[in-house]
Structure formats: C-alpha cells, structure tokens
Length: 171
Image 1 (cartoon, helix red, strand yellow):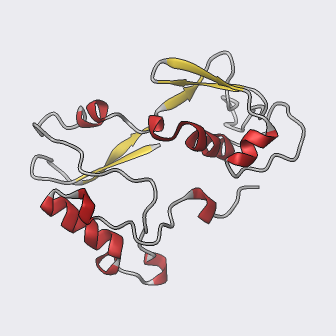
Image 2 (cartoon, rainbow, N blue to C red):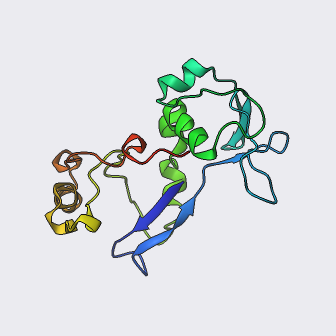
C-alpha cells in the first residue's frame, strides 16, 4: 500500500490524501475469500496482477527464508497470510511496488513541474507513543532541511524502525 501524504503551496488541503494498492489478486487465483476476507492463498503457488501484468510465484521454503519468512507447515489453501505474501513481495519486487513518478505526480494536476526529491523505505519514525516529538526526531528534522534546500543528501534516515522485521510477528 502506498500511502500518499501531500503538502505544498499547490495543494488545497495538506495531509493524508489516500492510498494506492499497486497490485491485486488474479481472478483465477484469489488470495482471499471474498465473503470472509480470510487468506486462501497457498504459499507454494500464487499470482498477482501488478501494473496490468500477471506475475506468478512458486517460492520454495528457502525463497521465503531468504526474505526472513519461516514456512514450517504444508502447502494448501490458507497456508500463508496476506502479510507474509506482502513481505515476500517487498523482498522480491522491491521498488516496483512503488508508484512510478509519472503515476504519483498525476495525483497533483495543479502542481506543475514537480520532481521527486527523495524516496525511502527505511527511516526512523518518531516514537510518539513513547513521548518523542517529531520536532526532536533526526529523520523529521533533516527531512525538513532536505525539502527546503531541495537536496536529498541532507536527509538522514536516523535509526530505521519502519522495516517489517521490527514489528510483532503475525501468528
């Protein structure tokens, strides 16, 4: 899921604009039950539609392990959760899951001649629940500097905590 947060003088209202899901299940091989939304995906063989193209996957246990995902049960319908499929796709497809620049900028027709300054998947999200203020976060501070100076080299990711391996594991 690509969440779109926008700010700027050519934007009517800044903040969360919406989200884009860059891929869908194929009709021939759905990933979730349409009534219950429970996973019906088989870890050994599944497909997605990405940018209008069908991509089929038949990963082995070793392929999953290289992505940091342990598969220790038999294959079959419902044998893998959607979150593990997403984690595998992130490992395997990386940047092709991002909106390309043309599609991303098409969301902002009033903003002419925009160019992307930086893109990252790993950064230090402020620990707001732990009392950290965004204004005290190195990542947020340097993001502001990089944007105002239009110089991505001024951005520091800090101590990245957004990578999925830092999160609680699903069951």
